[in-house]
Length: 86
Image 1 (tube, rainbow, N blue to C red):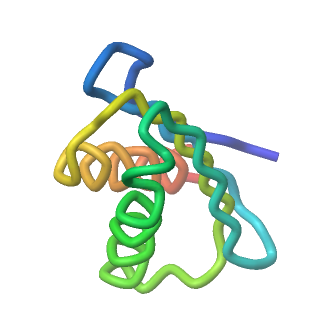
Image 2: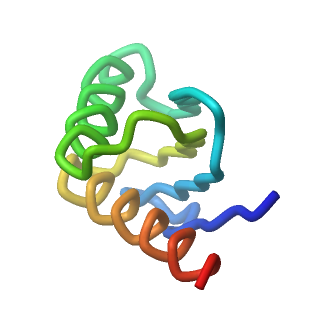
């Protein structure tokens, strides 16, 4: 199964890995999960909704990334996954 990723494990960034899946599954590991876990999940779900994606495995390893970085990393990982099928 093909996977694609985008990002780093540097401070204030995140590493997002995606792969095709039969349903939507989101796994979040974050140094700020207790404070911002719900917000990170909301950004992921909003981005997937914007792209009309209903089934995908998304793994977020977060080191304090802001919303726009999470969204950009996710969109790039999805684009890379799509390009790998070409």
